[in-house]
Image 1 (tube, rainbow, N blue to C red):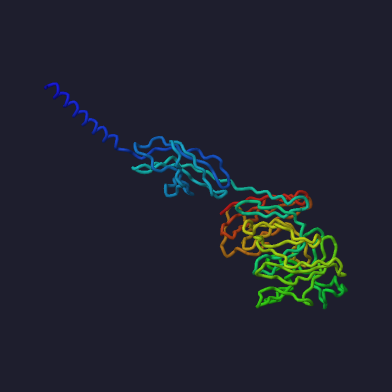
Image 2 (cartoon, helix red, strand yellow):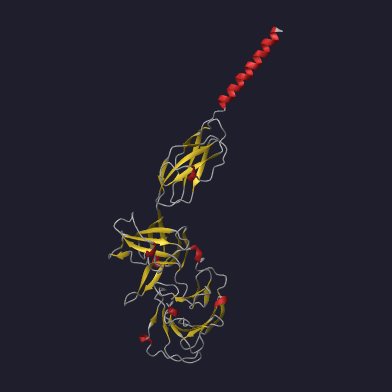
Length: 428
């Protein structure tokens, strides 16, 4: 009996000891964690992570990386939680801005609270972009501020281009195609079958694309205002733009030296179709293009070769995918127009041209942004007789249609031998 009593006492003592031991183990603390080294740094991304040294005696509920623009970011600044099993984890930091200093630290959370690793900092790189237009600037290059080069296409495979938007009347010419394309309005009475009198041709005014507005193409240069859009008249009933015989006729000199007469008859606006005809000055080699459809295209323009009698399919990429066009055009801002090489903005893209003492530190206001498509233009470089110099104090601030703002600083321009140019770009 005495033995049984002693045994029972031992059991009770063991239970009490076990209870007190459990209470001691049930007093957890916040986790301890180490922030992993930052690697794979680019202009928009980097890699970091963490190592959980101690769970603090409680299950880990969350773990991840905090990131911010000041030291010691908190869990409120964290990226989506890493759900990997184990004490070590890696997270790719995405969507960063180039040339910005970020602070990161790993975190782990249990039922007690959040434990943080040491705070580390890093700076994303400023992206250096190289654009290759090719020898003689053979290509046009469409560029996205976010994604880089979208497309490079031959610059001289078209003569005229028709706007696709149902709300646009624009028709442009390829002014910088080889020896150049020259457009003039025929100033005399005419019928399509009749003879063309070119007496006085050299005194007729040249018509050029606007340097500041895509909407005002060379075919629109002699517009007098709504409903007159230059090449045609808006019909308030059909909503088409129409040009009846005897209206506006154009004489166009192509880059191969040949002359054509061209009559743009109709834009069927809602259908995104055009009808036009052209022929040699004497009426030979006539071409009648009826109901040329541009429907379904997401580009700004449909490009046509009068020399090869064909629509150039898919020349311009989807207009929502690019912001800047590296190309050649005719600068008409002076009394003696000449061909230049530079940058034009897409429709709706805004820019500011700044001359500053410190390109690393700039200030600007929203009302400085301009929709003029040649705000970046071509004069950020100059020829010194042997090579091109790039202005080191010129900064361009560009806002895309989505409202994202970028800073561009040109760093080099090789000239026509290779058509290579370079610039730094940073999202602000």
